[in-house]
Amino acid sequence: MKSIWQTVLLLGVLAILALFALGLRNDPHEIPSPLVNRPAPDFAVQALDGQPIRLADQRGKWVLVNFWGSWCVSCVAEHPYLLDLARATRARSDFVIIGVDFKDTEQGAAQFLARHGNPGYRHAFDPAQKIAIDWGVYGAPESYLVDPSGMIRVKQTGPLYPGWFEKVALPLMEAKP
Amino acid sequence: MTVIPIPTPTLFVPKTNMGSRGDYLPLRVQGGALLQWRAFTEADLRSKSAQRAQIRAPQGHSLGGRTPDSPPAGTGKWRVFKNKACFSLFLLLLTLCVTPPLHSSPRNEDPSEAMVRKIARELRCAVCQNQSVYESNSDLAKDMLGVIRDKVQAGEAEGAIRDYFFQRYGDYIYLEPTTEGKNKILWWAPFIALLLGAIALWRAILRWRKPSAPVGDALSPEMQRRIQQDLDQTSV
Image (cartoon, rainbow over all chains, first blue to last red; front, side, top):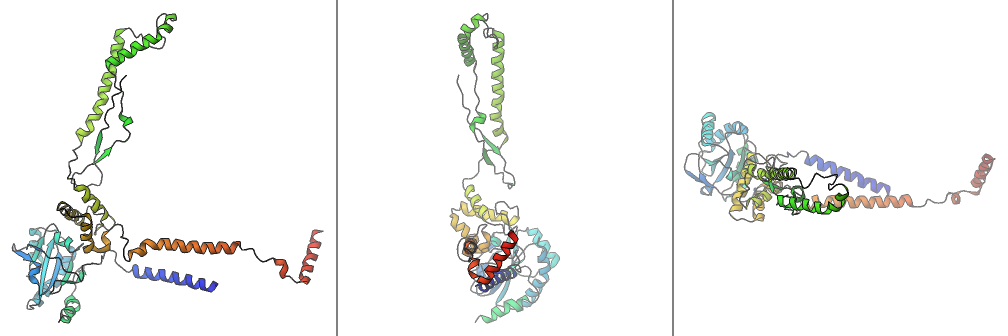
């Protein structure tokens, strides 16, 4: 009788320790996005180049939607990879990158692109971060990979890293018939 | 004597940690008694002193027509001075009622703002983590407040707006977790733990209270005899 209770107690303590081990490794600043595997919220706004831009126009292609701002320090760190990625995927017909410049000024964005290099793809301009809130963005940079049917498949919180496309995006793109 | 009840004024006090939108919350001064003054009018005073003079007349007769503790009611100068003083004091105090509203800006917010506040207070700011969207000063929270405001003004229901944010930020967005799904564990675990603890405690108490077996029965006659012997020796 006594040994049963001791075993139960031991198991209980171990269970709590296991929960701690799992929970304490999570980053509380990283909020899991419920939008993954849901349809991407569409946007139709003015782009930084002054022309209208609409996400739904890219239906049928994989779209990397990258949220950034000239005020964002990590975006500077991420930028060289985006330049590389844009150059490397320019020839692909099934993949486009769209930037969303949010909580920013047109002047600030232009200065950022002039200083750190212009990757060449288009950017939606979202000064009141309406698109950002619509996409559940809470920091920058954040990136979403949208599949040809318009579903969000991956969310990357924080900068994209060298090799991200080959490691995360390509397997998904090639798995799709 | 007439008592003029002065309507309780509503003081406008700017609430601290408020955004720059210039919202002011009314702080209703509680207890109208605090500000209920008795208004003296000259006529009142005259009739009062006339009454006093009437009542005290028989007493005052033996004291030479004057009451010892009150100034002469009949002499005009002092009475006029007292009345004037009372009246100007009353006017002075009356200005207190007027000044606070003069200082504050009127509360002329949109009626839908109450709903915006209610929703924003229950949503968690995604950047600062432990503040509500309404209380936070972060840019994201301010823009979220803007989104809520737009949606309320567009006539969307409270539930729909809460759901909009839930769809995008998940469970995280509610300051108070919902009681659905996995969160049920969160809500019920403390009560289950309490129940288990109570059962364990009950069992332990039962065990403590169980009378222990009488010692004497288990002893052999030989042992009993020896104990008795020892007891007899020590008690002598």
